[in-house]
Length: 473
Image (cartoon, rainbow, N blue to C red; front, side):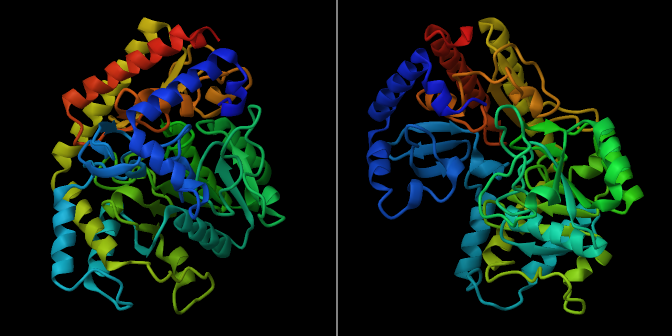
Protein backbone atom coordinates (compact mmCIF):
# COMPACT_ATOMS: atom_id res chain seq x y z
CA UNK A 1 0.00 0.00 0.00
CA UNK A 2 0.99 3.62 -0.40
CA UNK A 3 2.61 4.93 2.75
CA UNK A 4 1.14 7.69 4.91
CA UNK A 5 3.89 10.04 3.71
CA UNK A 6 2.97 9.45 0.06
CA UNK A 7 -0.73 9.79 0.78
CA UNK A 8 -0.26 13.00 2.70
CA UNK A 9 1.22 14.68 -0.36
CA UNK A 10 -2.25 14.63 -1.89
CA UNK A 11 -4.01 17.79 -0.70
CA UNK A 12 -7.41 16.13 -0.26
CA UNK A 13 -5.96 13.29 1.79
CA UNK A 14 -3.89 15.66 3.92
CA UNK A 15 -6.96 17.78 4.63
CA UNK A 16 -9.02 14.74 5.58
CA UNK A 17 -6.30 13.46 7.90
CA UNK A 18 -6.29 16.82 9.71
CA UNK A 19 -10.08 16.70 10.06
CA UNK A 20 -10.02 13.17 11.40
CA UNK A 21 -7.26 14.01 13.87
CA UNK A 22 -9.24 16.93 15.28
CA UNK A 23 -12.40 14.85 15.57
CA UNK A 24 -10.54 11.98 17.24
CA UNK A 25 -9.06 14.35 19.81
CA UNK A 26 -12.54 15.66 20.58
CA UNK A 27 -14.15 12.19 20.72
CA UNK A 28 -11.41 10.49 22.76
CA UNK A 29 -9.75 13.28 24.79
CA UNK A 30 -8.48 11.00 27.57
CA UNK A 31 -6.79 8.65 25.09
CA UNK A 32 -5.25 11.63 23.31
CA UNK A 33 -3.93 13.04 26.57
CA UNK A 34 -2.59 9.64 27.62
CA UNK A 35 -0.80 9.12 24.32
CA UNK A 36 0.76 12.57 24.58
CA UNK A 37 2.53 11.52 27.80
CA UNK A 38 3.35 7.85 27.13
CA UNK A 39 6.52 8.36 25.15
CA UNK A 40 8.97 9.54 27.81
CA UNK A 41 9.91 6.07 29.02
CA UNK A 42 8.13 3.87 26.47
CA UNK A 43 9.71 3.84 23.03
CA UNK A 44 7.19 4.95 20.41
CA UNK A 45 4.51 4.72 23.12
CA UNK A 46 4.01 0.97 22.56
CA UNK A 47 5.96 -2.29 22.61
CA UNK A 48 4.20 -3.59 19.50
CA UNK A 49 4.30 -1.37 16.41
CA UNK A 50 1.02 -2.55 14.88
CA UNK A 51 -0.95 -1.42 17.92
CA UNK A 52 -0.29 2.20 16.97
CA UNK A 53 -2.48 4.18 14.61
CA UNK A 54 -1.99 7.74 13.40
CA UNK A 55 -2.70 10.32 14.72
CA UNK A 56 -2.94 8.41 18.03
CA UNK A 57 -4.45 5.18 19.30
CA UNK A 58 -7.30 4.82 21.76
CA UNK A 59 -6.38 3.34 25.13
CA UNK A 60 -8.50 0.52 26.48
CA UNK A 61 -9.84 0.80 30.01
CA UNK A 62 -11.33 -2.69 29.78
CA UNK A 63 -12.41 -5.21 27.16
CA UNK A 64 -15.35 -7.57 27.14
CA UNK A 65 -16.88 -9.78 24.47
CA UNK A 66 -17.00 -8.02 21.13
CA UNK A 67 -15.97 -4.64 22.49
CA UNK A 68 -13.23 -2.41 23.80
CA UNK A 69 -14.22 0.27 26.29
CA UNK A 70 -12.07 3.37 25.93
CA UNK A 71 -10.85 5.46 28.89
CA UNK A 72 -13.77 7.83 28.51
CA UNK A 73 -16.28 4.97 28.45
CA UNK A 74 -16.95 4.79 24.71
CA UNK A 75 -17.73 1.30 23.40
CA UNK A 76 -15.92 0.23 20.22
CA UNK A 77 -16.83 -2.93 18.33
CA UNK A 78 -13.45 -4.61 18.02
CA UNK A 79 -12.17 -6.88 15.24
CA UNK A 80 -8.47 -6.80 16.19
CA UNK A 81 -9.48 -9.11 19.07
CA UNK A 82 -6.14 -9.61 20.74
CA UNK A 83 -4.16 -9.90 17.49
CA UNK A 84 -6.83 -12.37 16.23
CA UNK A 85 -6.40 -14.64 19.26
CA UNK A 86 -9.86 -14.24 20.75
CA UNK A 87 -12.32 -16.45 18.87
CA UNK A 88 -14.72 -16.27 21.85
CA UNK A 89 -14.28 -12.51 22.24
CA UNK A 90 -12.44 -10.58 24.93
CA UNK A 91 -12.19 -12.02 28.44
CA UNK A 92 -14.31 -15.15 27.95
CA UNK A 93 -15.72 -16.29 31.28
CA UNK A 94 -14.71 -19.92 30.75
CA UNK A 95 -11.02 -18.93 30.61
CA UNK A 96 -11.16 -16.18 33.20
CA UNK A 97 -12.81 -18.47 35.75
CA UNK A 98 -10.16 -21.16 35.20
CA UNK A 99 -7.35 -18.64 35.77
CA UNK A 100 -8.93 -17.26 38.93
CA UNK A 101 -9.46 -20.76 40.30
CA UNK A 102 -5.85 -21.72 39.63
CA UNK A 103 -4.48 -18.65 41.38
CA UNK A 104 -6.78 -19.18 44.34
CA UNK A 105 -5.47 -22.76 44.52
CA UNK A 106 -1.84 -21.64 44.77
CA UNK A 107 -1.02 -22.46 41.14
CA UNK A 108 -0.28 -20.49 38.01
CA UNK A 109 2.70 -18.20 38.53
CA UNK A 110 6.20 -19.24 37.58
CA UNK A 111 7.60 -22.08 39.68
CA UNK A 112 10.40 -23.42 37.52
CA UNK A 113 9.03 -26.93 38.07
CA UNK A 114 7.16 -29.46 35.96
CA UNK A 115 3.38 -29.32 36.17
CA UNK A 116 0.69 -31.68 34.88
CA UNK A 117 -0.99 -29.03 32.74
CA UNK A 118 1.99 -29.10 30.36
CA UNK A 119 1.63 -32.81 29.71
CA UNK A 120 -2.16 -32.71 29.48
CA UNK A 121 -2.19 -29.78 27.07
CA UNK A 122 0.52 -31.33 24.88
CA UNK A 123 -1.48 -34.56 24.63
CA UNK A 124 -4.62 -32.62 23.71
CA UNK A 125 -2.89 -30.57 20.99
CA UNK A 126 -1.09 -33.50 19.40
CA UNK A 127 -4.35 -35.48 19.29
CA UNK A 128 -6.22 -32.62 17.64
CA UNK A 129 -3.49 -32.00 15.04
CA UNK A 130 -2.34 -35.57 14.36
CA UNK A 131 1.24 -34.64 15.25
CA UNK A 132 3.63 -36.88 17.17
CA UNK A 133 5.22 -34.58 19.70
CA UNK A 134 5.57 -30.88 20.50
CA UNK A 135 7.41 -28.30 22.54
CA UNK A 136 5.97 -25.09 23.95
CA UNK A 137 7.49 -21.64 23.71
CA UNK A 138 6.20 -18.12 24.33
CA UNK A 139 5.63 -16.47 20.95
CA UNK A 140 4.94 -17.20 17.31
CA UNK A 141 8.19 -15.54 16.25
CA UNK A 142 10.21 -17.89 18.46
CA UNK A 143 8.21 -20.90 17.30
CA UNK A 144 8.84 -20.20 13.61
CA UNK A 145 12.50 -19.48 14.34
CA UNK A 146 12.93 -22.80 16.15
CA UNK A 147 11.06 -24.68 13.42
CA UNK A 148 13.49 -23.43 10.78
CA UNK A 149 16.47 -24.28 12.99
CA UNK A 150 15.10 -27.81 13.24
CA UNK A 151 14.64 -28.04 9.47
CA UNK A 152 18.14 -26.80 8.74
CA UNK A 153 19.63 -29.13 11.31
CA UNK A 154 17.64 -32.12 10.08
CA UNK A 155 18.40 -31.65 6.38
CA UNK A 156 21.89 -30.21 6.67
CA UNK A 157 20.81 -27.50 4.22
CA UNK A 158 20.83 -23.74 4.65
CA UNK A 159 18.28 -22.19 2.29
CA UNK A 160 14.66 -21.48 3.22
CA UNK A 161 11.73 -20.82 0.88
CA UNK A 162 9.01 -18.47 2.15
CA UNK A 163 5.97 -16.85 0.58
CA UNK A 164 6.18 -13.23 -0.59
CA UNK A 165 3.95 -11.22 1.74
CA UNK A 166 4.06 -13.83 4.52
CA UNK A 167 4.81 -12.71 8.08
CA UNK A 168 6.50 -15.13 10.46
CA UNK A 169 7.55 -12.79 13.24
CA UNK A 170 10.64 -10.68 13.89
CA UNK A 171 13.20 -13.43 13.51
CA UNK A 172 15.99 -13.86 10.94
CA UNK A 173 14.27 -16.56 8.86
CA UNK A 174 11.20 -14.41 8.29
CA UNK A 175 12.51 -10.91 7.72
CA UNK A 176 12.55 -10.86 3.95
CA UNK A 177 9.66 -10.19 1.60
CA UNK A 178 7.02 -9.16 4.12
CA UNK A 179 6.05 -5.61 3.10
CA UNK A 180 6.07 -4.29 -0.47
CA UNK A 181 8.33 -1.51 -1.70
CA UNK A 182 7.41 -0.06 -5.08
CA UNK A 183 5.36 -3.18 -5.75
CA UNK A 184 8.21 -5.60 -4.99
CA UNK A 185 8.71 -7.92 -2.02
CA UNK A 186 12.33 -8.82 -2.83
CA UNK A 187 14.14 -7.04 0.00
CA UNK A 188 15.18 -7.48 3.64
CA UNK A 189 12.93 -5.99 6.31
CA UNK A 190 15.52 -5.00 8.90
CA UNK A 191 19.08 -3.92 9.43
CA UNK A 192 21.28 -6.01 11.70
CA UNK A 193 20.50 -9.37 10.10
CA UNK A 194 23.25 -11.93 9.39
CA UNK A 195 25.05 -11.15 6.15
CA UNK A 196 23.80 -14.30 4.45
CA UNK A 197 20.09 -13.68 5.17
CA UNK A 198 19.32 -12.30 1.73
CA UNK A 199 20.76 -15.37 0.03
CA UNK A 200 19.39 -17.84 2.55
CA UNK A 201 15.75 -16.77 2.01
CA UNK A 202 14.08 -17.47 -1.34
CA UNK A 203 10.67 -15.98 -2.12
CA UNK A 204 7.83 -17.67 -3.98
CA UNK A 205 4.41 -16.31 -4.90
CA UNK A 206 1.43 -17.54 -2.89
CA UNK A 207 -1.10 -19.74 -4.68
CA UNK A 208 1.17 -20.15 -7.69
CA UNK A 209 1.87 -23.90 -7.90
CA UNK A 210 3.57 -23.51 -11.29
CA UNK A 211 6.13 -21.08 -9.84
CA UNK A 212 6.69 -23.46 -6.96
CA UNK A 213 7.25 -26.33 -9.40
CA UNK A 214 9.82 -24.29 -11.35
CA UNK A 215 11.67 -23.20 -8.22
CA UNK A 216 12.01 -26.73 -6.84
CA UNK A 217 12.92 -28.11 -10.27
CA UNK A 218 15.79 -25.63 -10.44
CA UNK A 219 17.13 -25.70 -6.87
CA UNK A 220 15.05 -28.13 -4.80
CA UNK A 221 18.12 -29.93 -3.48
CA UNK A 222 19.32 -26.70 -1.81
CA UNK A 223 16.27 -26.07 0.35
CA UNK A 224 15.94 -27.06 3.98
CA UNK A 225 12.26 -26.15 4.16
CA UNK A 226 9.29 -24.33 2.74
CA UNK A 227 7.74 -22.04 5.36
CA UNK A 228 4.18 -20.95 4.60
CA UNK A 229 0.80 -20.11 6.07
CA UNK A 230 -2.08 -22.26 4.84
CA UNK A 231 -4.12 -19.09 5.38
CA UNK A 232 -1.85 -16.12 4.87
CA UNK A 233 -2.29 -13.41 7.51
CA UNK A 234 -0.62 -10.04 6.99
CA UNK A 235 -0.48 -10.72 3.25
CA UNK A 236 -4.25 -10.50 2.93
CA UNK A 237 -6.21 -13.20 4.82
CA UNK A 238 -6.12 -15.38 1.70
CA UNK A 239 -6.62 -19.11 1.94
CA UNK A 240 -4.29 -21.44 0.10
CA UNK A 241 -5.77 -23.16 -2.91
CA UNK A 242 -5.76 -26.94 -2.56
CA UNK A 243 -3.49 -27.14 -5.63
CA UNK A 244 -0.88 -24.87 -4.02
CA UNK A 245 -0.79 -26.50 -0.59
CA UNK A 246 -0.77 -30.02 -2.01
CA UNK A 247 2.00 -29.05 -4.44
CA UNK A 248 3.97 -27.70 -1.47
CA UNK A 249 3.62 -31.06 0.30
CA UNK A 250 4.50 -33.10 -2.79
CA UNK A 251 7.52 -31.01 -3.82
CA UNK A 252 9.11 -30.76 -0.38
CA UNK A 253 8.78 -34.52 0.08
CA UNK A 254 10.22 -35.19 -3.38
CA UNK A 255 13.27 -32.96 -2.85
CA UNK A 256 14.03 -33.85 0.76
CA UNK A 257 12.94 -30.51 2.24
CA UNK A 258 10.56 -30.09 5.18
CA UNK A 259 7.15 -28.45 4.94
CA UNK A 260 6.53 -26.06 7.83
CA UNK A 261 2.96 -24.80 8.17
CA UNK A 262 2.73 -21.62 10.22
CA UNK A 263 -0.77 -21.75 11.70
CA UNK A 264 -0.31 -19.05 14.29
CA UNK A 265 -3.48 -17.38 12.98
CA UNK A 266 -5.18 -20.36 11.32
CA UNK A 267 -4.80 -23.07 13.94
CA UNK A 268 -8.06 -23.68 15.85
CA UNK A 269 -9.76 -20.80 14.01
CA UNK A 270 -11.47 -22.92 11.33
CA UNK A 271 -11.92 -26.12 13.31
CA UNK A 272 -10.89 -27.46 16.71
CA UNK A 273 -7.50 -28.41 15.31
CA UNK A 274 -5.11 -27.51 12.51
CA UNK A 275 -6.20 -26.09 9.16
CA UNK A 276 -3.73 -28.17 7.11
CA UNK A 277 -5.70 -31.35 7.70
CA UNK A 278 -8.72 -29.79 5.99
CA UNK A 279 -6.59 -29.88 2.82
CA UNK A 280 -5.51 -33.45 3.44
CA UNK A 281 -1.96 -32.20 4.10
CA UNK A 282 0.26 -33.24 7.00
CA UNK A 283 3.23 -30.86 7.40
CA UNK A 284 6.52 -32.03 8.86
CA UNK A 285 6.34 -29.24 11.42
CA UNK A 286 3.27 -27.29 12.54
CA UNK A 287 3.51 -23.95 14.33
CA UNK A 288 0.63 -22.97 16.63
CA UNK A 289 -0.17 -19.88 18.70
CA UNK A 290 -2.79 -17.17 19.29
CA UNK A 291 -6.07 -19.11 19.70
CA UNK A 292 -4.42 -21.96 21.61
CA UNK A 293 -3.36 -19.52 24.34
CA UNK A 294 -6.88 -18.48 25.29
CA UNK A 295 -5.65 -14.89 25.58
CA UNK A 296 -2.38 -15.77 27.30
CA UNK A 297 1.14 -15.95 25.76
CA UNK A 298 1.88 -19.41 24.41
CA UNK A 299 3.04 -20.96 21.13
CA UNK A 300 4.13 -24.44 20.13
CA UNK A 301 6.09 -26.34 17.50
CA UNK A 302 4.58 -29.76 16.81
CA UNK A 303 5.39 -32.42 14.25
CA UNK A 304 7.44 -35.46 13.37
CA UNK A 305 9.24 -37.05 16.27
CA UNK A 306 12.42 -37.72 14.26
CA UNK A 307 12.71 -34.01 13.46
CA UNK A 308 11.74 -32.73 16.89
CA UNK A 309 14.22 -35.06 18.59
CA UNK A 310 17.09 -32.95 17.30
CA UNK A 311 16.20 -30.66 20.23
CA UNK A 312 16.00 -33.50 22.75
CA UNK A 313 18.28 -33.99 25.75
CA UNK A 314 19.77 -37.02 24.01
CA UNK A 315 20.61 -35.18 20.80
CA UNK A 316 21.19 -31.52 21.72
CA UNK A 317 21.85 -30.74 18.05
CA UNK A 318 19.34 -27.86 17.94
CA UNK A 319 19.12 -25.42 20.83
CA UNK A 320 15.35 -25.31 21.15
CA UNK A 321 15.45 -25.66 24.91
CA UNK A 322 12.84 -23.12 25.95
CA UNK A 323 13.13 -20.03 28.09
CA UNK A 324 12.16 -18.96 31.58
CA UNK A 325 8.50 -18.54 30.67
CA UNK A 326 8.11 -21.48 28.28
CA UNK A 327 5.12 -23.62 29.31
CA UNK A 328 4.17 -21.03 31.92
CA UNK A 329 1.48 -22.70 34.00
CA UNK A 330 -1.09 -19.91 33.88
CA UNK A 331 -0.75 -19.65 30.09
CA UNK A 332 -1.21 -23.38 29.67
CA UNK A 333 -4.21 -23.45 32.00
CA UNK A 334 -5.82 -20.77 29.83
CA UNK A 335 -4.86 -22.61 26.64
CA UNK A 336 -6.03 -26.01 27.80
CA UNK A 337 -9.33 -24.51 28.94
CA UNK A 338 -9.85 -22.74 25.62
CA UNK A 339 -8.99 -25.74 23.46
CA UNK A 340 -11.15 -28.10 25.52
CA UNK A 341 -14.05 -25.66 25.12
CA UNK A 342 -13.52 -25.45 21.35
CA UNK A 343 -13.41 -29.24 21.09
CA UNK A 344 -16.52 -29.72 23.21
CA UNK A 345 -18.51 -27.07 21.30
CA UNK A 346 -17.01 -27.47 17.83
CA UNK A 347 -20.37 -28.11 16.06
CA UNK A 348 -21.76 -24.78 17.31
CA UNK A 349 -18.72 -22.51 17.41
CA UNK A 350 -17.25 -22.85 13.93
CA UNK A 351 -20.48 -22.48 11.90
CA UNK A 352 -21.27 -19.41 14.01
CA UNK A 353 -17.86 -17.90 13.29
CA UNK A 354 -18.22 -18.64 9.58
CA UNK A 355 -21.66 -17.04 9.45
CA UNK A 356 -20.39 -13.83 11.03
CA UNK A 357 -17.48 -13.65 8.61
CA UNK A 358 -19.78 -14.24 5.64
CA UNK A 359 -22.13 -11.46 6.79
CA UNK A 360 -19.28 -8.98 7.07
CA UNK A 361 -17.66 -9.83 3.74
CA UNK A 362 -20.99 -9.79 1.88
CA UNK A 363 -21.83 -6.43 3.47
CA UNK A 364 -18.46 -5.00 2.45
CA UNK A 365 -18.92 -6.20 -1.12
CA UNK A 366 -22.35 -4.54 -1.17
CA UNK A 367 -20.82 -1.27 0.03
CA UNK A 368 -18.13 -1.49 -2.65
CA UNK A 369 -20.79 -2.03 -5.34
CA UNK A 370 -23.18 0.65 -4.05
CA UNK A 371 -20.50 3.33 -3.63
CA UNK A 372 -18.39 2.18 -6.58
CA UNK A 373 -15.48 2.00 -4.16
CA UNK A 374 -12.23 0.36 -5.33
CA UNK A 375 -11.90 -2.24 -2.59
CA UNK A 376 -10.07 -5.56 -2.39
CA UNK A 377 -11.98 -7.84 -0.02
CA UNK A 378 -10.51 -11.16 1.11
CA UNK A 379 -10.96 -13.81 3.77
CA UNK A 380 -13.28 -15.92 1.62
CA UNK A 381 -13.61 -19.70 1.99
CA UNK A 382 -11.67 -21.98 -0.35
CA UNK A 383 -12.48 -25.26 -2.06
CA UNK A 384 -11.08 -27.03 0.99
CA UNK A 385 -12.41 -24.73 3.74
CA UNK A 386 -16.15 -24.14 3.85
CA UNK A 387 -16.28 -21.07 6.12
CA UNK A 388 -14.12 -18.22 7.40
CA UNK A 389 -14.47 -15.66 10.20
CA UNK A 390 -11.87 -13.33 8.63
CA UNK A 391 -12.28 -10.22 6.51
CA UNK A 392 -9.44 -8.12 5.06
CA UNK A 393 -9.94 -4.92 3.07
CA UNK A 394 -7.59 -2.78 1.03
CA UNK A 395 -8.36 0.14 -1.26
CA UNK A 396 -6.88 0.13 -4.75
CA UNK A 397 -6.86 2.36 -7.78
CA UNK A 398 -9.57 0.24 -9.37
CA UNK A 399 -12.16 -2.28 -8.21
CA UNK A 400 -10.12 -5.22 -7.01
CA UNK A 401 -12.42 -8.16 -6.32
CA UNK A 402 -11.16 -11.19 -4.42
CA UNK A 403 -7.35 -11.49 -4.47
CA UNK A 404 -5.52 -14.82 -4.62
CA UNK A 405 -2.05 -13.54 -3.71
CA UNK A 406 -0.60 -10.47 -1.96
CA UNK A 407 0.98 -9.09 -5.14
CA UNK A 408 -2.46 -8.47 -6.63
CA UNK A 409 -3.14 -5.74 -4.07
CA UNK A 410 0.25 -4.06 -3.92
CA UNK A 411 1.74 -4.34 -7.39
CA UNK A 412 2.68 -1.23 -9.39
CA UNK A 413 -0.35 0.93 -10.01
CA UNK A 414 -2.61 -1.18 -7.78
CA UNK A 415 -2.34 0.44 -4.35
CA UNK A 416 -4.57 3.41 -3.61
CA UNK A 417 -2.46 6.58 -3.32
CA UNK A 418 -4.34 7.96 -0.32
CA UNK A 419 -6.50 5.47 1.58
CA UNK A 420 -4.15 3.39 3.70
CA UNK A 421 -4.77 1.46 6.92
CA UNK A 422 -4.05 4.49 9.13
CA UNK A 423 -6.67 6.60 7.35
CA UNK A 424 -9.21 3.79 7.34
CA UNK A 425 -8.71 2.92 11.01
CA UNK A 426 -9.01 6.58 12.02
CA UNK A 427 -12.26 7.01 10.08
CA UNK A 428 -13.73 3.86 11.59
CA UNK A 429 -12.68 4.71 15.15
CA UNK A 430 -14.89 7.78 14.82
CA UNK A 431 -17.72 5.38 13.94
CA UNK A 432 -17.11 3.27 17.06
CA UNK A 433 -15.38 0.42 15.21
CA UNK A 434 -11.85 -0.85 15.89
CA UNK A 435 -10.24 -2.67 12.96
CA UNK A 436 -6.90 -3.91 11.69
CA UNK A 437 -6.10 -4.75 8.08
CA UNK A 438 -9.36 -3.13 7.01
CA UNK A 439 -11.51 -5.20 9.35
CA UNK A 440 -10.10 -8.32 11.05
CA UNK A 441 -11.69 -11.31 12.73
CA UNK A 442 -15.21 -11.94 13.99
CA UNK A 443 -15.71 -13.78 17.28
CA UNK A 444 -18.65 -15.67 18.70
CA UNK A 445 -19.26 -12.61 20.92
CA UNK A 446 -20.15 -10.38 17.95
CA UNK A 447 -23.94 -10.27 17.63
CA UNK A 448 -26.18 -9.11 14.80
CA UNK A 449 -26.27 -5.59 16.22
CA UNK A 450 -22.47 -5.39 16.24
CA UNK A 451 -22.27 -6.56 12.63
CA UNK A 452 -24.95 -4.11 11.49
CA UNK A 453 -23.30 -1.22 13.33
CA UNK A 454 -19.96 -2.14 11.79
CA UNK A 455 -21.29 -2.11 8.23
CA UNK A 456 -23.17 1.14 8.86
CA UNK A 457 -19.93 2.70 10.12
CA UNK A 458 -18.12 1.40 7.06
CA UNK A 459 -20.71 3.03 4.77
CA UNK A 460 -20.26 6.37 6.49
CA UNK A 461 -16.46 6.09 6.27
CA UNK A 462 -16.61 5.30 2.54
CA UNK A 463 -19.02 8.19 1.99
CA UNK A 464 -16.54 10.44 3.75
CA UNK A 465 -13.73 9.28 1.47
CA UNK A 466 -15.95 9.94 -1.54
CA UNK A 467 -16.90 13.42 -0.30
CA UNK A 468 -13.18 14.22 0.08
CA UNK A 469 -12.60 13.17 -3.55
CA UNK A 470 -10.40 10.20 -2.65
CA UNK A 471 -12.40 7.53 -4.47
CA UNK A 472 -11.68 9.22 -7.80
CA UNK A 473 -7.96 8.44 -7.46
